[in-house]
Image (cartoon, rainbow, N blue to C red; front, side):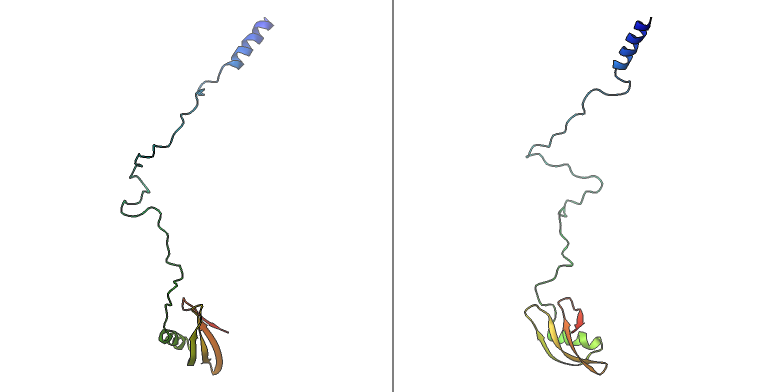
Length: 118
């Protein structure tokens, strides 16, 4: 009787569990090179718009964006007076001498229009 019980228990343990699959999932292969990719669906960009565009709105331009007159006006609007001797360096930064609050100040204006004092 014990031997029959152990044999039955061994058979039950060796059987696969119900609800489990013993087959491997199907493998997916890439489409052939001449095949066209599927289009449409949620999150798909319109066909007229390239999929991999690079936003260059923050890129610094190599073109000098400000003339001397524009830099002078920017300084005056920022409260600087007696703007003189503005020169533009090879790096595109404008530098010059000004007066602010009655004190002489050396300033620089970068390609983005940021005013700095030295």
